[in-house]
Length: 129
Image (cartoon, rainbow, N blue to C red; front, side, top):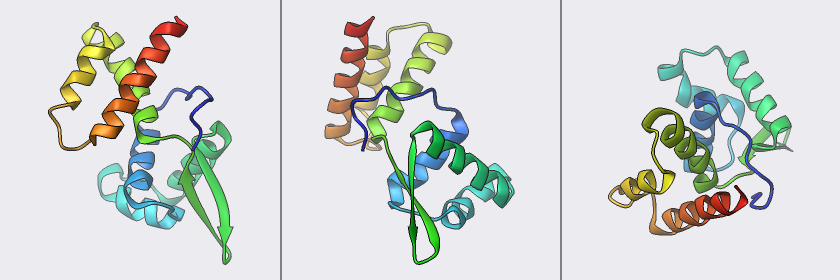
């Protein structure tokens, strides 16, 4: 996975696709679509278009496997979360991103290693500014 290149802005839809692939590993468009369709209401072609654009953005990697394209994440889950935390903390809460990260520490949805990486990525961002 790409750890050195900056993560581009993530839309909610892109995050939802990444979340499915982070959880389940390499997946085809059909597998991702079937998991997202009940809540997203997307047509299959919408899911495919989104995932192909995510390949172009460097968020996903696509490989052919026995005639089917399988997609895998090119960014870690914490790197994706950083983009959402930054957006949420800056634009919604108008507070420091570190305070938002502290909320994750109480959650079982993210591992201690992921929290550590999330904190490191946020600190790195602060130093770059």
